[in-house]
Length: 293
Image (tube, rainbow, N blue to C red; front, side, top):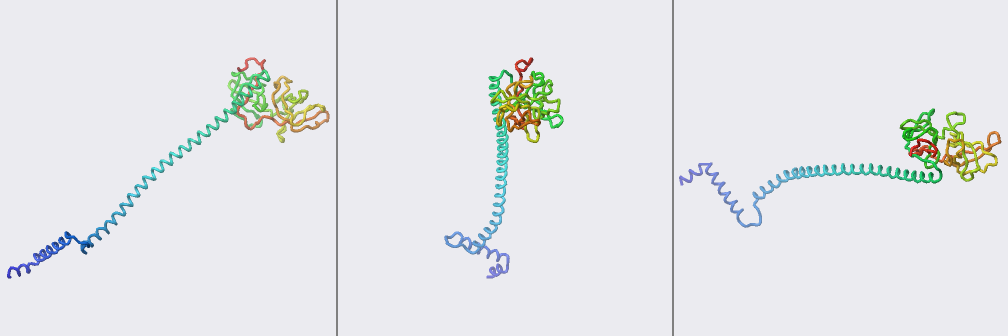
């Protein structure tokens, strides 16, 4: 008994003995088959679960954030590639449309050239309009053919629609053209056009002015009994030795008695579109020496 009392008097040894007994009891409960957990086990499980959810949620959020960033980066790269593809498509489409339009113009020009050659013994040399002067005192445009191509002053220049002007100055690699919209009877720098009508060759008149307000060529010296009438197609007559015969000038819009009542005047709407000059033809008469082939 005295030994037992000595054990109880030693507090540390007593506490250790109690802990071993509790631990043995808990292990017994844990190893045995039972339907319910003890409250210590529940407490430990709940505590671990609570702590885990606080670690799991931020970890899951960070993982989702990095995944979203990766997806956004992939989407950005795909959008950039799509933008580049759309830009290339738009550029290629514009190029295709330009080439298609140019091809149509050139085919039309070739057909016109062959048609004209069958009708008249002229050579038609195609040229590109490379510049248009904005100077009101020198309202000309430039073409990319010059003396090295056989171009000479006073050669007529036309489009597939009609007459546009005369070559005014020639340089080795380019020439300037004076359009018929600059015709002025009071100016010595322009050449009047001797004209007739396609429907009846007995018609005759002289185009020597351009009415800026009306946008019409003015045809004078028309005889009172001349059969010229509205909607007739006016062409060059070939008289005067400057403009070759048969070049379309325009259509008759109206006819009226002239200023002195002896002759009539007609207003001619030009056939050529002067706002859209791209390709033109220089008309080379057959007797011109050194003409371009």
